[in-house]
Length: 569
Image (cartoon, rainbow, N blue to C red; front, top):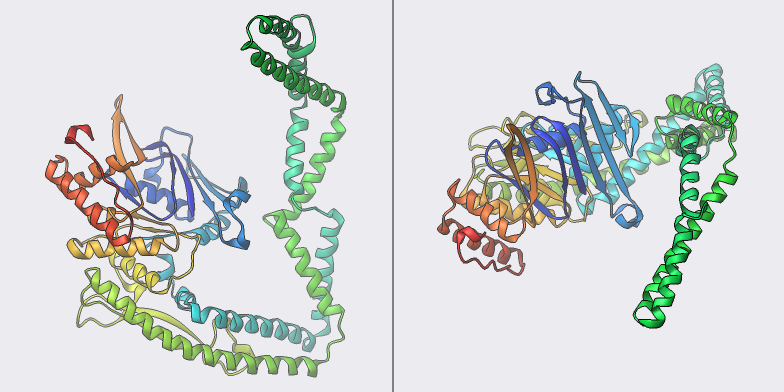
């Protein structure tokens, strides 16, 4: 989930740091307040193209940084430091730099990482639905399909790998020899450097220390001098203070405690002085030490450029090369035996694939009914939804696909009499977002770390459909973080967290601010959404009633807001 968003020098946003919480969060504010700028900032983390008009012409660079936490992967918790920090910088000339956990990467690497943790659903931003290849993955995420889908995918990978080896064996001996030589070269090159896990970060730390060794020694000596080097040092003066306090404690008993506390401070400072003294004694360095670190770092970074971008990638490449070389050299392959194994796996693949196909068609019918029910409730009264299957026409080993015997794509029609078309043909961002919400509400059952952002989802709706929309967003948020930009109070009242975005002018400069509202502030903001700029007592009463109804429907105890008058809120 998204824990923190930092935005600097992005359009009207000078500097903004915003913390997010679990569950359902809404972003509200007057039209033009800057809500879309926050979504735009998040879209930059997804690798989207930068609109030059949104860059601050007077500042050096635009910075967008998102911190994401994970709670499911390998049963790790946030307390164990399971965080992902994505950052993108754009200078005033439009030059990009991207970072993952403070390590510079290319923009594609940032985009790939971001797609795993956040998705923005809005006008032509719903990447999952606009790419038909994702539809089968969404369908297979239904509980009854997931395991069988994984099994089919695994068998397909095994067939492809053994087919690749068979082709090498059946091809020219020179081709096989060349592949082995390439593997051996990569292995030897990495073994020659012999990098260790996290060694690059350790070397960077050592390099920084060596480059700043003069400053380190200077500060260590400064600490030692001020603590314990002459008659006016802190420790010497503390000895006098302790002597005075001990004599005072014989007269005033309450000073006994103060004497102990002063003694504790002296002990701590004495330990610090000893530590500084030891570091100075042990801080032996030479120019050669720095050169050795720089040479080692250069060797590792060369491997990263070739096999990376990260050191983990280098080590993974080494492991894969070793495994493949072992397969090619360590066995005397019998082509007949290999073909037999491939045939057996292909039969297993077809058998599992047919079973998966039957289950997919069964679940797709249920999914279509559920999605239609939801979109009909969300102001698409005549909307139709259907899952269309496209056969891969698999006849032999060469045709196997990790997705199984077929792909699928989602078809949609918003109005009666209109043909069902692929979702990528839908022009309305609001409709696309509502279809995505309906699909996710229909298939989502497990807690997920992924953050879902909805923008323009409330376009063209109001009244009861808007209330239903809020209810479904809240339901979806039970299984993962949901963030929604909305103008409708019927949606906002269903949120657990409410952030207000404002555009303020100070000293002839305009900027965008965002704040997490408390209960009283939330009632006032919903009152504004009900009545407009002039918030009446009737609007406030209606806002409280909307919150009460939403809380009751969610099964959450209502928080009573006591107010004497509008001015007190």
